[in-house]
Image (tube, rainbow, N blue to C red; front, side, top):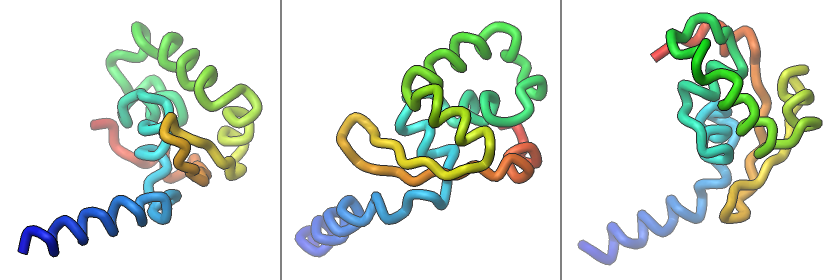
Length: 106
């Protein structure tokens, strides 16, 4: 039984890069080290977040320095970009700005 669970866990870990694109905010959170809430604040309507006046500039600098200025501009234009996390996993990310604006602040 334990071997079966270990095999399933290993299969899920190997297939993890295939899940990229289903949750772009989650992927960007993993890549940048920022919380999903801060990624949503950066990419969406920042004024909907109470902490916006205090943390937006710092979070934006970290986000842009991690993904790169060109990739940030492409994301904001709705284009897809391929990014790598610290372990070398590749994520293809594309932001739907309208869906992101409709996403509720947690």
